[in-house]
Length: 271
Image (cartoon, rainbow, N blue to C red; front, top):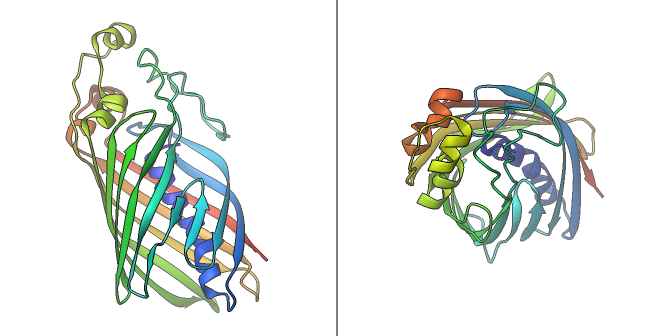
């Protein structure tokens, strides 16, 4: 799964969290979802594929959350304006054969052949969110203990609100975001050593860390039932790869530093 796709799918996971917060009683909540996402086949690619993706999120009260897209976290600090705690995320492997499990359109990319696989990465760290009225500032810092073995930092701001569309009350959010990464992250995904250069045809390239990307995302959540257990989720996002990631020969010769995604999902909250 690409980084753009993972960020966009987080909007689907937020649906379950928002539903839990809207509930009058505290306890366990499970949200199931599925839908279609149109996104680059890998971070930096210029070819896009349509994927059908499932999602499930489990929350407890307003403190614990767990999903593939949103990670596993616990709000040790949980006030109306400030939330913070530990978080764990998984970044799935990137296979040089270009195979994607949930893709339903397009062909497997040959761009990565000769570059080797990057194993799935478990990233451990912490998060913080601070609310300023209708704007939420958020940040995360994580260190991978497998896979790319680098650190990742995310910063963002989200402007949220509610409105009426076609007689239905909808929730929306939009805002900018940026990602910073360490040397090991960029080297794993965008570096090209001598052996990889010989096998792939790309020039040798030593990738260092720094600002990885910047962009923006938006989501719209519309209830489909009177009890608000069913919801339609529309998501869209754009990110531009920059620094050593954007300058990589993989991106410059075979891909594109402009990355966009769009998706539509249906979510069902239980109970």
